[in-house]
Image 1: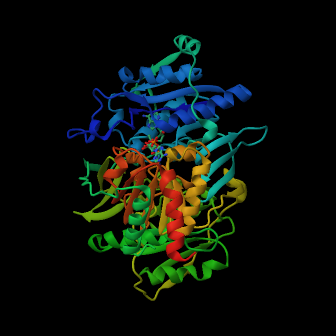
Image 2: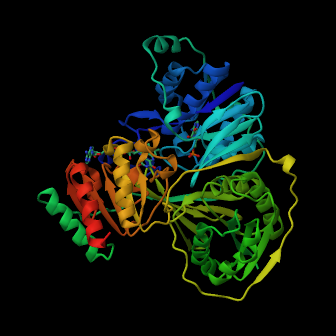
Image 3: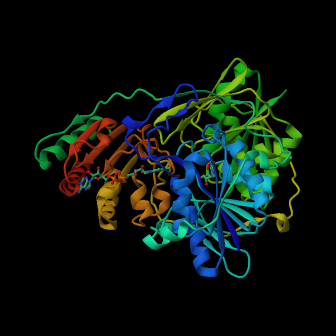
Length: 264
Length: 327
Ligand SMILES: Cc1cc2nc3c(=O)[nH]c(=O)nc-3n(C[C@H](O)[C@H](O)[C@H](O)COP(=O)(O)OP(=O)(O)OC[C@H]3O[C@@H](n4cnc5c(N)ncnc54)[C@H](O)[C@@H]3O)c2cc1C
Ligand SMILES: Nc1ncnc2c1ncn2[C@@H]1O[C@H](COP(=O)(O)O)[C@@H](O)[C@H]1O
């Protein structure tokens, strides 16, 4: 089975709020001087792919669209975790592209890769969380689509995937080729590479393509006609009243407040 | 008249609440843009007979009904096909879909098929100069992006529990039954099994939610929170680490990736208050935080704070509440 994992590199989403700033020119987060990481759920997607590799010898390629100058660390980590090969589509504008624009380019890259039975993405990117890349890739590639998948059971027949829903899970049978977006659970916690894996990763193939090398499908671009008017950090005023004293006093005070608010 | 098409789903015959929330979004833009509002109701079962009434009750006069045995819970591909066929006949200017489990797939794929503009996961819709102006959270809740959409058609998905269900304003309405063509053999995905996780009160609709975080230390801590929740008649939720570690079901997760909730009371226990968590709870009417770290960011969004080890607070609190309620 050939698996392609789409990885996005983002500014560490768990940085303290004080390190967050919006560039007024691009209306995107300032990246300079901030640590860059693989987008949270993309690591879980890669882990799911690597488990398929461990279980049945799937071949795993990682694909990223981003400024080539900045993505090498993310790619190295993915290769050290166990991916076989990496493809970088070098586009300095990538951080400003809409999900729809990215999906068109990623789909073109996947067509150029040639064989892909399963395409895995994160369930949402850690920065804009549009949740569109997976379903749009599926449309562009004519593949099946299931989102918020935490586990994949690939046997002899069609794979069955575990999809998170409002009140539990659905087990969904899916035809290949398929695009799955992956959410985290206890079964797909990303593995940590060992030192020898980090060394071995240096010898794994990395190809760099330009968007100009890719043939996008003729389909219309759902990103057009959508303008980002502004990205604003909302004012937050702290209003916390602390209930002090011994635990017994704190509990009594809290219960009284809940009564006052008619919550008790 | 060109229309806004509200996608209302009733997989088991009952109209979902998030479908009704979409009507608030439609009403926010229909007047200024000079558009009518039509709802397409999709689902199956005897409940579909009454479901149009609920839509009329909330001010939608024209209801298109698609009752098809394949339109059951989670059958996204069947829903996509049905909505696509309806949209090709109706040619709406704007389509509103709930960004719930199914809707988050449907919105993007429908937009692609219709060649429509697309904005997902919005919490608010408005209009300005002929554009639909949508707002959505970005960067883990650190910022809000405002998107102006001039292209038509346009598809918007609305984050569940962001909009209030509009107050009833009954209109007399019409129901048109539509038939759609679907061959089960054509559907690339099929739900084989539905696994429900126990929870007494639906997290999204509970008036009281007790949220536990990594600070709970394990499933035992959550047993205490369950007791507190039932004393208050509420539900238990969680931050990401407990859900990720299997201490609680994944569907209990609250926040950017998890659910958005707006209860009357949210009690955050052993939760630091990362923006991605706060993104899902900031609409709660009252937030109480119990955390042993006085510097925890959760205190900057809470109304009431208790700096303590939860083990010293939660058990006596349960006892106190039971006492006051005469339980
Ligand atoms: C893309 C993305 C999406 C995300 N989505 C979500 C989401 O949907 N929901 C979500 O919650 N998070 C989400 N996160 C994760 C988020 O950034 C935080 O990592 C997470 O919310 C932290 O959970 P926590 O507060 O339980 O744990 P921690 O940050 O580890 O905090 C634990 C807290 O417990 C306190 N504590 C410890 N022991 C005790 C005790 N005995 N008594 C009282 N207090 C105690 C500590 O002081 C600390 O403040 C997301 C992150 C990313 C990058
Ligand atoms: N620039 C990118 N390069 C590779 N994959 C991406 C890129 N942007 C988004 N993706 C993939 O699409 C997923 C969902 O992104 P989104 O639709 O933006 O929420 C991410 O988790 C990635 O797997």
